[in-house]
Amino acid sequence: MENHKKSIKTSYIWRILLFSFFLTLSVPVFSQSLYEIQFSASGVKYKGFLVYFNEEDAYMRVAYTFNDVYNVVNIDYTSNSGQEDGYNYFVMQGKNPKFITKNSGSRVNQQSYNPDHFVWVWDKNTKGEKPFVTDDPNFSEESLKRVDSYKELKVSELTDEYLHQFYWDNEKEYLAFQNMRDNELDSHVAQEHYDNNTTQQQNQEANYGAAKMHLVMLVNSSIGDIGASCETDSRNITKEFEDIASALKVDFRKYEVKGSSFTKTNAMQVLNGLNPGSNDIVVFYYSGHGFRWSDQTDAYPQMDIRASPYTKLTAETTLSVSSVYNLLDKKGARLNIVITDCCNSDIGINKMTETSFLAGRSYQTPHIEKLQKLFLATKGNLIVTSSSAGQVSWSNSVNGGFFTLSFLQAFHEEISYLKTQEPSWENILKKSHANTVNKTDTGCRNCTTQNPVYYTKISKR
Image 1 (tube, rainbow, N blue to C red):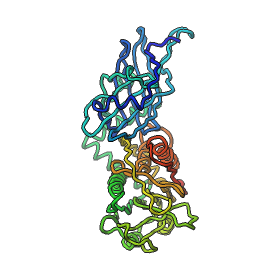
Image 2 (tube, helix red, strand yellow):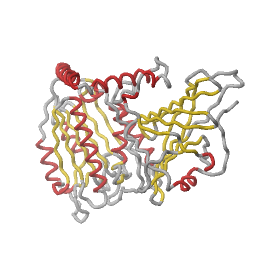
Image 3 (tube, rainbow, N blue to C red):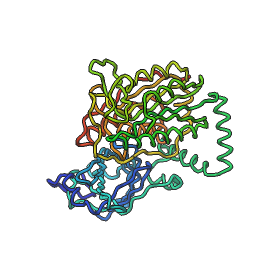
Image 4 (cartoon, rainbow, N blue to C red):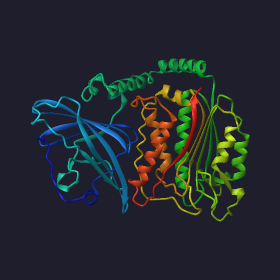
């Protein structure tokens, strides 16, 4: 098999390689999902179009001309990130290269393609540098080369001409990008934006009725060990559901118990006083310490409602996740969502780690119809907690809870224009589970496995 890309075999392992570049690399910020990476090898120029959802779900279309023939190859990517001695690393490893264009030449002389791998390393003092690329799976130092360019793509840049560099016009991904682009551009036209929103709200209320979203936040932001992580969770979840309510044109109401007000008395006052309508949505979110009683059989943990570890642990300072679920179920809202990010193990086990993940939340313009299907066209209950019985839940101050980050990644992926399947809460929870396991099993060197537990009873209304 002829290969136009240089392949170097070496005994170096990629983890050792990283430390030779500590002071020259910087952090890639995956706050969006679409990137262009251009690089060169053996006189051939390559242009990559990267679609990034999360550590386990990304792909790149690579376009290049070789022997006067235009080629496009699809490469799947998984990512690993971590921290060593104050330095962070992020590695995207390619696999399963597949030609999208016709592979020219006879069967014997057809091209092969070694998948490309990308490497970033950074600390707080390094910024602005481009990543390295190599097609050597061992990441030998001599095979690494800076990419020519690396940039985040704006939706407005996804013209038909640009997309045709990587996709046939009958591919479902091409049509999804067109749809996403056209809706994004329309939303920037003020009068059309107003008219579309007015029409959307009228049609939505005609189809689903008027609804409110109630967000109950119980967050232990004052506790010394994990308070910063809980505060990160609080910001991320609040912003998320505020944006969802805004996109759906539904009234949004937030009830928050945290900081100096973080007590069981205040939590129960909010929960008991909640009075949702029959078409409303109730979301309960908890971030803090969790535990299990020694004789507990319930799969879901106890929430530790103490702002200080010196406060005695009693029935007055704990609240079970299942009791919140059962209480909300009796309130009569159309859709109840209970999410908790806490340990589900013995009392006193810490869940903090220094391992940091890139916030690859892949949030382009959300598909409004998918949001409607998830929040307005469904009824029932959902409960999920971040770890199984006997397990701790991991977090850090930068990303917050690993499960919360994984849940948001899965949610954003599900409502994206780039996913063409029917959206469902079951898909989101399965993907959240897989993302969380990946972070604790492969992305965090000192973490133990974390398996979220969930139950859904949701149907179409």
